[in-house]
Length: 480
Image 1 (cartoon, rainbow, N blue to C red):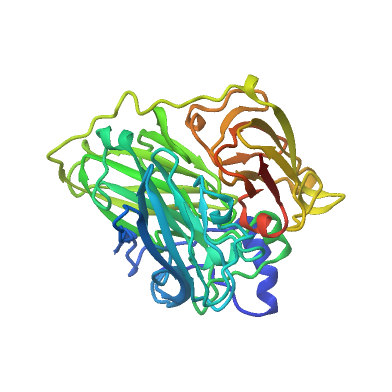
Image 2: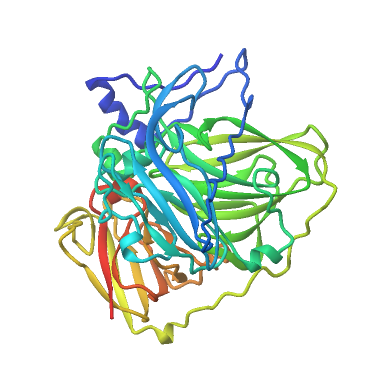
C-alpha cells in the first residue's frame, strides 16, 4: 500500500494549504502491493505542421478542458492543449515563418505566451493579448534565433498560476544548421526526450488543490506529488547509450535540484536560449520555475535491465525519485560528447547605454510583491528602451526579515547573458543565453541584453507564478 497526504475540501483544509506550501512533505511510500514506475513516461506528440506553398509552418492549438489520470486511482479535471493535460511539442527552424491558430475552448479568457521566443510584441502572448472564450488568435512571426528548447504557457493577468497548474503548458523546439551538424542524440522520443517536471497537490477526491492561502501567494503554490510529463512515477526504457534530456522546471513556485540516484556525472549542453559554447560536466543541475537545461546522460556502461532514478530535490519541500530509467541493450551507434557546441556572441558591458536597477521586494511601501516598489499596472509603462540598444539590468532580491524567499527575473522577447552574481562571475552552467534567472535572497544579479528587431510593449516579472499574478511584474516598451 501507499500513503499520501491529500487535502480535504472546506475551511479546515485552507489552513493546511499554507503548511503544505511551506513544507510540501513528499508522499510516504511503504513496501507492499503498490508498484512504482509501472507507467510509461508519456512523450508529448510532435504537433503536425501543415506547410503552405510559401513554406510557412502552420499549426493549430486548442486550449480545452478534460480529465486525466495524473495519479493512479483518480480521474482529475484538467486543462490541456489539443488534449487533456499539457500540450504537443511544436518544432520549427530558425528563419522559418510560423502561423499558429489558437482557439480558446476553456470558457474563460486566456493567452498563449511563447516563453523565450523573440517575436513582435503583438504576438508575444502576454496579458495584453487576451483570447476571449470561443475566440481564435492568429499569431504570425518569423523565427529569428538559434536552436533552443523553449516552451509555451498561458499568461492572462491573475490567471497564469491556475491555468499552468491545471495543465496548460507545452514545449517549443527550434532547430538550425548548428543543431543539425552536432553528433548528439536528436531522435525525438527515441534518444531525445522532453522532461517536464511539476509538483502538484490534490484534494481527497483527486481534484487539483489550487486554492491559495497567504503563504501560497508568498512562496508560490508548492505541491507534494511530483509529476513528470503529467504522470507520477513514470518509467522510461532507454537503450544503453547516450540520451538527451530537455529538462523544464514547469512548477509554479519550486526550485529544483536535479540529479541521478547514483550521483553519476552528466553533461549540460544548453541553457534556456540554446547551446552553450562547450559542454559542462555536472552531477546536479538547478532550475527555478520556467528555466530549462539540456543534458546528455551516458547509459552505455549500465548493464541491460538495470535501473537508475532521476531525483528531484524540491526547495522548499522534499526529495522525490521522480522517474525511473530502465536501460536496454547497447546502441548500435554511440554518440561522443562534442568538445565544442557553438559560438556565442558575448555582449560587452562597455556597449551598454544604460544600467537599470530592479529591486524585487516581498514587502514595500507600494505593497507586497513589487518591483521597485511598484505593483503591476496594465496602464503604466515602467521602462522605455531604445530599439537596438544594449542595457544592463541589476536585479536585486530584497526579501528580508522572516519572509526571505527566492525570486527570479524573466524578460519577454530577449535572451540575456549573466554578467555576475554579487560581483562574482556566474557558474559555468549559466554561461549561455538565458531568459529566466534565479535570484536568491540578498543577492544582486547583473544581466545584459540587446533589444533589437521589434518595437512594442513586453513584460518582465518574477516567474514564481503566484508572484507574477500577485503583481511582481512590469512592462517595458521598446521604441525607435
